[in-house]
Image (cartoon, rainbow, N blue to C red; front, side, top):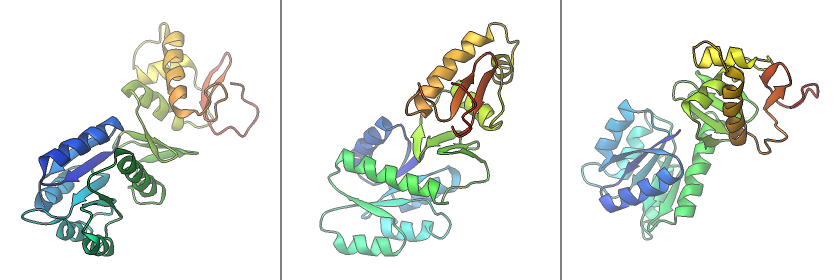
Length: 235
């Protein structure tokens, strides 16, 4: 799951943005000025910043310039219609995009998603804790999973199963072994329990769960992660 920092001194705008972003599955942090935003960035794992331009103490342009000295997270400016000069200046000092007030929720969602996709796929995010398989990227430190750049919402159990399978690509893991490692318990009745979670996981990571690309069943043996290119593993 991605964490988004909203920096705006108008509480109504912050509340509206939180509603839009929570509906898309993002976590949010809020700041009322640039100083507060930099403080949050120093202690939290932030993946994108929505930055208002006109704020007390430290405005959005100054805050963007400061954060660019240390962070490479995407910054989307929150601008008024008449702030064309500020938009250009903001882009010149390191902002990635802008959204004009009042917000169109569809446009906001698209711009946020686009910037996060670029951030994670073009090398902006930290890569030292990531496991990748095709279009699936699992970040262990933040416990987030993306599919073709889009965030997935997984339960803790689904996440642990996916993590286990992605760490053993091409290896067939029996249900009892999956149960033993994920649940850390005796695998009594493991087959049905694991099967239910695997089905839910496939519904989230596969375009067509009936013809899976990544997570397949090897009848009588178990489950295997791997891109569908070997032709020898039945689903």
